Image (cartoon, rainbow, N blue to C red; front, side):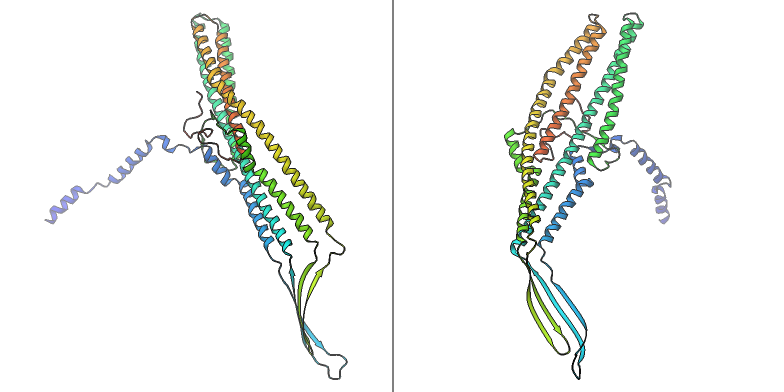
Length: 445
């Protein structure tokens, strides 16, 4: 019976090379997986903003300034510490027949007392400084987000131009080959061949230049983000076709309510007012409570009193005048900043309307007509009704319209980024201006 079981176990026992064969087959399966599983990471605008606003050292330094300002506010709330002085030694009586001698010591206490108006003014000035610093941090982050967006859209524009230049080069090469074939059989003159070869060289030059512009745009994007991007990261998205913004009146209201530059100006003005109150209140005599205890070989005494610092010679005239000048300066800067930002918003909104109209006209009219003209000129050349120059001119017109559309879309995106910066919106509207994340590159209609 045992012999039979042993034989069955031997029959079902795997061969020694079974495990190695399974591992080899698994390696073959893994090696045959699609290359997309190991593709480089895709980064969209949201990913770049997240990296730039959370890992950029400059942004982190701006946040550290806010933390330092909060520390200064805590310092302003601190009460003055008492000063304790102790002395010891030996003493001996004089002018006595039996002089006494022994240890002597003295202990004194000095506690400065603050006026409530002085303390409140100092605390209010420190709190206003925290608000001003935090508003400056928000303005810096908005500018950093705007730089990232502009660099991102500039890269999308350069990628679209590169794709268009490559298509132009391929199409021009096909035209050149077709004309070379017709010239070989005697159907086209040599002038057409020379013209096509010249056009091919021009298309090749534009293609090579577009590749370099893409590399430069990638470098600018890395500098705008402020951190190294993942190895082999691919930037995806598309230029916005339509950007929907509120009316100018609503944008002005958002500017007044949320713009960090205006908030910083108001906080700086408030801080200057409290500093002026602080300087004026410091003209009052400073009070300190005193207590002292002395012990010598023959006497022990305790005393208490008050120390006053009388502003007899220095009435802090210079400090008050400086605080008044700072207050006037902060008021004028706030008014100037408010007017400048309002005018900048109006000018940018006008550019937004112009850019929107240009994109609409180029998409719906000019580009379609140029494409139709190119098709007609190509058909006419094939039938011998038009020459090569008419066909190439129609192709140049289509290229110019297409490149103008790419530029117009970039300008529309840049204008919307500036408006969002003015109203402190670090992320574009998801339904209108934010590009969708997709593995495809930028395309034209």
